[in-house]
Structure formats: C-alpha cells, structure tokens
Length: 503
Image (cartoon, rainbow, N blue to C red; front, top):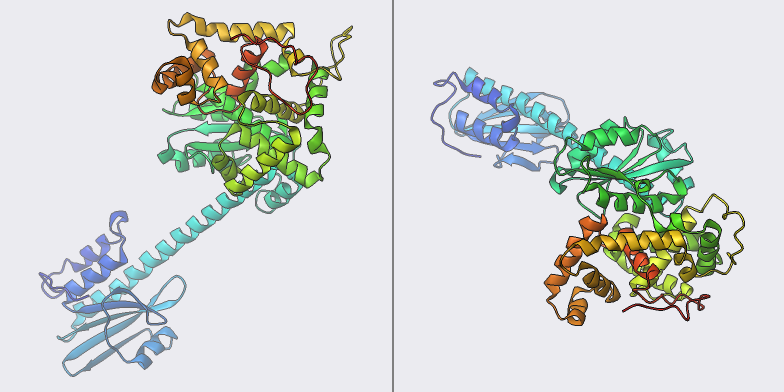
C-alpha cells in the first residue's frame, strides 16, 4: 500500500512507540499496521502467504525464487537493490503457513528504516497468532455449542443412549443419571451469549447448557445436579429482565415434557418477585383427577401410537408434544428437523388419534394425554372407588369435584375486571385463538380481543397468546365448567354425547 507520511524513521524517532500502539486491543488490525509501515518508510508494502496470495497492502513485484527461499526457511530475510528500487523481504510466521512481508521504496534503506521493517514483521506475527488463537477458540466454542444442542435434540426424541454416548466423549459423567430437571432462563436476546456462559459457570459445568434454537432470548439447562436450581435462582434474581422457569425432576427420556413444564413455569416467573418459578408450585388439573382413570384414558387415547415401531412412535410423540407447545417453525428448530417434517408428523398423529388439531379443545386433550404418559400417576386410585376407571372419558375426568372447584376458582379470577375478560377469552378459545374470528362473533375490534386476552394473562398467571401448556389448562377449565363443547377424539367417549355446553 503506497501512502505518503509526515515523517520517516530518520526524522521521527517516535515510530517505535507508534508501532507498539498497534498492539493495543483497539488497534489490532494487520491492514492498519501494513498501511502504517508504508507511510512510515514512504514505500509500498505487501503481506503475502506461502502461495503468494495478498493478505494486506499492495502487490510488490519480486523474484519468485527469493520469496520461495524465505517461505521454505532457507533464509529469514533478504534485500534486493537495482534499477532505482530497493526491496526488503522478511519472513513472517503466520498461524497456518509462512508468509512474507515485502517492502519496496525508491530510497535506500538506512538502519532505522530496516529496523522498522523488521520490528513490523514481529508485530504482525504477534497479531496474526493472537487472531489465530481467537479464531480457534471461537471454532471450539461453536463446536461445543453444536454438540450440546445435538445432545439436547437426542434427549427430546427420547434417544438417551445416543445422547449419553455423545456427551461421554467431552463431558464424562454429565448424563450418568436417570433423572434431571430442565430450566429455561430468559433474558435479553443481545445478552444471551453472556447469560449462557454465566449459566455454565453457575452450574459448575455439571449441566447441559444450550442456547435455545427456537427462542433467541432463551437458554435451556438440563441439570442432573439438584444444586443447579438454587444456583440459577441466585444468578437470575439480581439481573434485570431475566427470569427462570423450572420443571419437576423427570427421567431423561421425558426431557421434552420437562422442557414444556419449564416454559410453562417461565410464564409464572414473570409475575413473581424473585423472577423464578417451578412447575410444581401451582395446581394443575391432571393432579386433581383420579390417577388410575386418567392413566387408563391416556393409554386408550394414545393406543394407536403404541402399535408403531418404537423409533417411529417416539418421533411422533416427541414431535407432537413440542408441536402442541410451540409453532411448527420453533418445534423444528428444537428438534433439528424441517418444519415440513414437523407438520407431516403432526398430521399423521392427527389421523391416528382421530383428532383435529385446529380445535383447541382437541389439542388440550391430547396435550393432557401426552403429559400423563410422560409422568404416569404413581399413587393408586382412592380406596373404595368403584368408578369404571378403564372406560372413563375426558368429560368424566373433568367432572370430578376437585377439578370442578379448580376450574371455577381459576375462571372466577376474571370476574373482578369490569371488562368481560371471561366472555372474550371463551370466544377467543372457541375461535381457535383467532382474534379476528372472535371479534366478529363478539362484535368488537380484533385488537380489543387481543388486549382482553393479554389482560387475562397476569390474572390467571398463565401465558395465553403464545399457546402451549398454559393455554391448554385454561381450555380444560372451560371444558370442565361446560363453556366449551367436548372435543372429538377417535371413537366417541363415554358420557360425552349428552354433555351440556353453556353458551
């Protein structure tokens, strides 16, 4: 690069200090160093690699045999003078291959000009090695992050054997456990890399920390160690705009279900003073149903999937569980497949179960069955219960006294608002969470519907507009009190034909 300068080494003894200034963090740029040298010696400077490819500066014609000797290490430097040109060549050890710094000018090189060339070559070596180390470190970090994501995706489809094999090579002992908790840490998207590093540090490397592929603001933590929860709470509490949702302890094969629990808990955490919540901290309808009847109903509903080959059935179950929690695009990112694959698997599940996933009631029912399969009830049915637990349908499950009290109490929270939040929410659910269709039914503007639904979220302590488990619980509450028609699920369920629906 040819560039005029205000002074030369002969007239400006400060050149050495100027050169060292390029080693400061803000000035580490090889192109600027080459340009500085061109200006300092009033010449043309080129930095090339072993193949002669120009890395910085401007081309300088020079004898190929001379540069070949430098690249092969036969000599460390060379000089050539003739026909009004004076050239200095110095070998530069680049991170992957030798290079050559070539300087040409019309005036002969005195001692200080030659020293400037030699010292610049040394500075370039330092800068290029540092950049090479940084790039290598970045590549290793990206590779580790990709591996952690791959392990999570294997866990999501219940392939724990492969997940353990992948993890064992880099993080021995990390998944040598049968159970774990899943946490989702939410912060600002621009701070996520820092947040992920802090999660790794907080868990002492004893957890699988993954940057969520679906939500840019989320970090997913699969933590076998029970100390991870308190450590993450301490991390989240003092940080602004940061929240923590956690699952109950689940088997590794139920990681997808635990992830859904953590996302659900995250919605509650946004309204908590400590900005953290765990899924088990609030009552859920499935906990209030007869365990044996619930398990029998879920097995009956999901029986068509049980007859499939294990791998195929596992894929459909995992994909459907995530597809009911998130959009097809986000579920695809979490699973590492295309959104068309997600949609195709969901469509196949619909056909097998005889369910229409455009109906929120059907989605809520299948979601309940999948969660029951993921966390089967452990306690027996109440003593003396003579109910036909093997044939009870969804309507019968929701008719239990405990579920009825829960549903009425949950929806009654909306009555305190002067706006008809409950009526709007009911119409919005019946319209498949479509604000425009609900607005037409109610005779209001679509934005009014959205505002009412948004206003209901903190009252119910559930995330509604984003869909998922929180919304399905509210749908089940509406089904329990008769505000929605029971969904069609395969063969007609006992007791559903005459179920009253309040309008």
